[in-house]
Image (cartoon, rainbow, N blue to C red; front, side):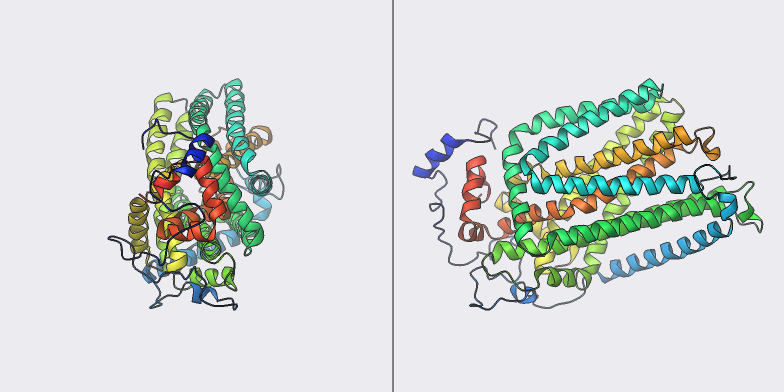
Length: 523
């Protein structure tokens, strides 16, 4: 669209459109849609939701409202591979923790009494417990802020990220940790530029956030799913943290009683850390996307059946996510896990270069990390809307991704998606929590001075994994917020008539803050 078109609270434009509709649409609140037009070229094929409520006074079940013509387990191979990786993680974790427990006296029982100088020990485990607590509390408060103050929430997120990043950079520079300080300053400069460019889009984003929050308060069990998902994420992070430390304690070579029978080597430690980190990424992504798919079913039910919400919408959507769509969710999560794992390796390498004072190495890995981040954004962008589609229609992952992308482009919903800031805002919030846990880890290592880190060699690894813990926990806590908005966009692309017929107030409000919505959803 041309940049000269009005943006933001364009009241005058809106009032003018009331009298003369430039795009030839029927007056607001008076849609002339007799039936959904699902036979458009390139439109995804599938059963149309009965948003006109053809069930009388009886509430339909979720499986009736979003019926699968030929139910089957899609992408089964990905689901089986996921279960094998989970089994491998459980096996490695069990062996490592058993070895750690058998040498508990050597590893220590508190922060300062460990005799180990060859690898991570109880000191690190206690640090990760602190990180879990901070990440859980910060994430819960963050979701609470979104629920209570939708519009201010966007401003708070941007300002907190900028301030916290700046404080962290100043602190690192004051301790002569110049490489890390410079990297944080670059991040802050980027955040300031991004946030200033986002200001005109805040009204539309705040409206969509408020809509999602209002629905979550009155339909389904959105916040219950969020709370349970957050607790599962915390438990997973705790399990991973214990396993992470136990692998070092069990197989690190040197003066390690656990190596009395041999079998210890740096290569084994590295390989196992790589495996459990990749597994943790995949499991946490699967958990996040399962929550997203479940919540998408609730919001889809609200979109098409606002006055007669299907019975058991949350349970029905969760059941479909854990059965017919289990493989599809595993496949989409695998792609993101691979990309995030590569980005994590890049982050560790950048931290190592920073610890050695190699500015060029830091800049090189920072650029590489940005490129991987762009790829991650593209895949996550597609996944969000594909999983919302899968929640309602149960398609295989590749078919759902292709159909959703084609429909979004055809309907012009990409303009609305670009206008909405909630995805980037929530990413900034998760990054903020990651900053908090990584700063906590850095300060912890500075003040406790563990023997295994006497030369600072483990600082990049510990700080990077502390950041990972905070980032993933917050991402899972905030998933239900973004899921609602993603589903509204997908449903609008699929059937814009339902928006005007079932939610005329929302449509009017969208036109008020972003007049181009009329062109976007009827392009």
